[in-house]
Length: 163
Image 1 (cartoon, rainbow, N blue to C red):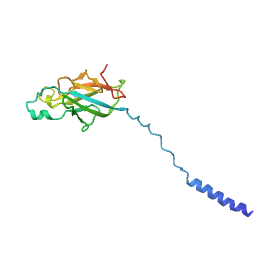
Image 2 (image 1 turned 180 degrees about the vertical axis):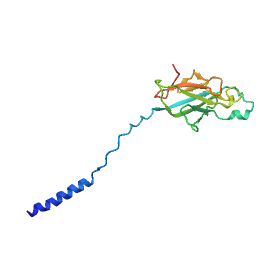
Image 3 (image 1 turned 120 degrees about the horizontal axis):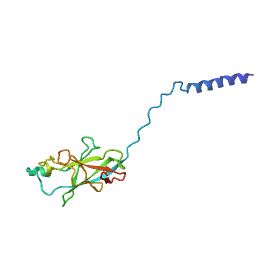
Image 4 (image 1 turned 60 degrees about the vertical axis):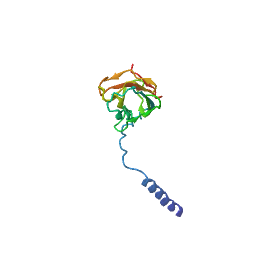
């Protein structure tokens, strides 16, 4: 009989230890599921600069060409690099949101070209741009300081003109 008395305290002790590890608080309500991460791609940029500089201040014509995309926040502009021996400037945009096949608006893309400062666009243009190997042919606000080319980007980083 003495052995049964010893087993009860051990069983009671095990039960108390198990209960101490239990969480008696109710679980919080499930929140909304996480949004899926957007698919992004790296995209090659090419811009062909006009041969002559329309700016009467020739020193400013030596400034860099700068690329802007509608998905970019201020400070994320890309300074394009000149291709020696040509009037082509190149770069790569990282993290471009994929928007092909089209389910939303196309991206707006443009460059600031110091050769065009004294034109009606103030140096901004969407013309002569290749994005992801695609020559861009459709524009928003042409001939103004808000001029931009329209483009969709697929998961391989290939540009596509709007349909």
